[in-house]
Amino acid sequence: MELNLAGKTAVVTGGARGIGLSVARALAAEGMNVALLDLLDGVGAAADRIAQDFGVRAYGQRLDVTDQDATNAAFDAVRDELGTPQVLLTAAGIEINGDSIDVAASDWRKVIDVNLTGTFFASQAFGRGLLQAGLPGSAILIASMSGLIVNVPQWAASYNSSKAAVAHLAKSLAVEWAKSDIRVNAMSPGYVLTDLTRQIIEREPELEADWVSLIPQGRMATPEDLTGLVVFLASDASRYITGQQLVIDGGYTAV
Image (cartoon, rainbow, N blue to C red; front, top):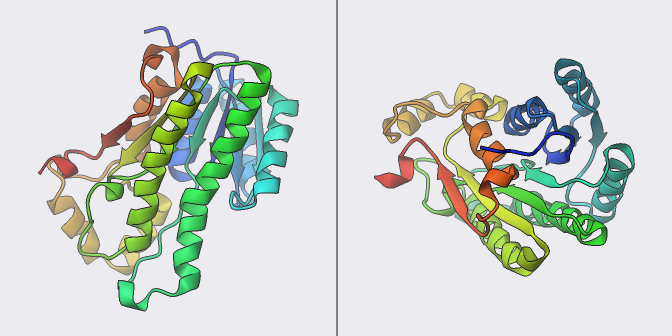
């Protein structure tokens, strides 16, 4: 396959750790310059490590993706530092579980704001930059298998709803931008053993056994299990794939 990624620029929101960082490193391994945008203080150090490890240019900046003006400014800064981004991965996201009758309005709005609105603001800034530059591009929006099914035993109506919306957002933007050669797809992972997931199962260790029992492959994914699909979707090898939701869940939604 001809990936044709070397020398191009990628932006990864939520890129300081977990899925975002693993994907950013995989893109850098293909020769891409990488910008990490994240609320975490360690985002600059994570970008520096990528530059050292792969010999590419990397940029890190703290960002609250729910702030539209700040998001636009961050993409302008990336363009000034690394050139117009042609690949976007939206990995910034949160989950707040709880019985629906007890969910506070602030928690509901926070999940929707980060997962859906933040994804839209990043996509909007990304698409605007490509349209202004007359360049093609590929956006991969991280949705979830939770947008297709209802996970058990935990209850997460806000998370499930936000991720279903992200998948449809990807389709909506894909159709809107198709004639400008800007592709948009959603990737829907199953359970991934990230730092955040580890914190959850440390508090509730019985969850891990429940989750794994429902996965035909018998294990949760690692962040590295997702990188191949993202590199493919980012590259010219997938140039006729847009508006799709690709599930990567070890078979969870197949049964």
